[in-house]
Image (tube, rainbow, N blue to C red; front, side):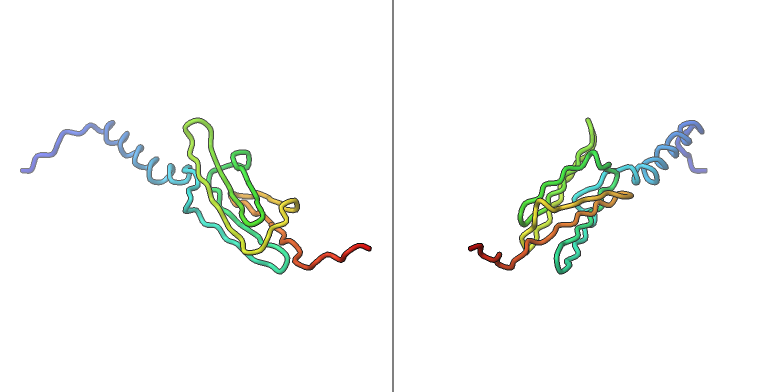
Amino acid sequence: MPKFPSCKVDDFQREFDELFDEILIGRWRTPATASEPAMVLEHKDCYEARVCTGAFKPSELDLQVTEDRLKVRARQGAGGGSWERQLTFSDTIETEMVTAKWAKGILTVVLPKKDKRPRPERK
């Protein structure tokens, strides 16, 4: 007859609960990573960037916009995770006109393109 290591029911239940928490619940609590999906749609007059922020809240996000780049940084409080995502654009961005909104873990940033037409000269 094979011998099995002694195992108490309480130990088994605790181990099972920890495994359940780790596999099924903990997975949904983890913060976003650099591999979270991002999508950029190019329209005639703007870019629309959609970035999945995972468990990060809007107050934990920092956006930086330059004439050709969007940088999204996220950082949770002490002991929390952090990540950074950069998107680069081929057209120049009108940085003063950028808007952003967050809903259900998705950050949507609209980045208007600068008008390439030469401005009329004043006389």
